[in-house]
Image 1 (cartoon, rainbow, N blue to C red):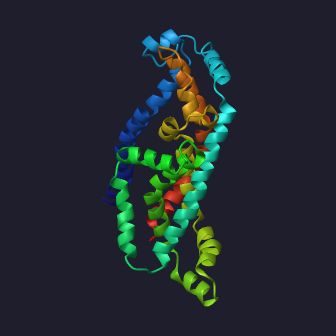
Image 2: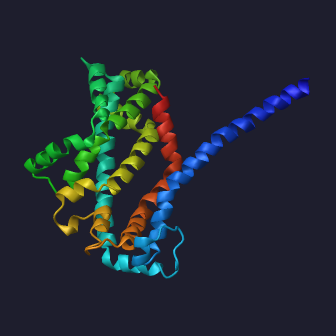
Length: 286
């Protein structure tokens, strides 16, 4: 009786893994299909890409010539540099602005502190498309439309609620004795923030940094609507303007999209461990 009971218990985790594994596998297949279709289309000829729905191109080796054509047409180094500048600007301002905001909301007291936090978090429920026209008018009036700042600042603002939530929770989860000890030693608030809390918040900051880099690198709408000088094109906008013909050449567009994904994929896979650790730490602390 005892052995049969133990066997039944041992079989439960395996059955649960199957129940969880099957839908996750199906979801992974569905999620990967657009990526496979993109790579497959990039290896087809122009005619084949327009009419064929097969994932396997007729001449995959010959399809690599498309990448050569795209590389010659795409100012990859210039566009990548612009994307990197935008991404680094997003990361830097996110750390600075929301690091200070998260610290203030977690450790300082001031009137209506929690009310302000709730109001700021409610911005998550406002669709970005509803504020697009006022945003473009504001950027034009500030004379930063089409510049790096005109792209960076809206991205930083859009990611604010999530960044503030993660950092506030993370800082609140740290022992309050750290803050009290620093105050007893006579440290000012900015020094406590810069020398104690920001270094301790590296896991959450790492998540925000990776996420901000990826979002900034792939931003397409703002550059499309504001940038007029091709020297300011980022990678997604450069790929968008690859096709200047009457009919869309999907193989060329998809080859450009594959090339544009390479830097983002490399960054994510190199830092994915820290990305997940930072997300879990920011969500669970506090």
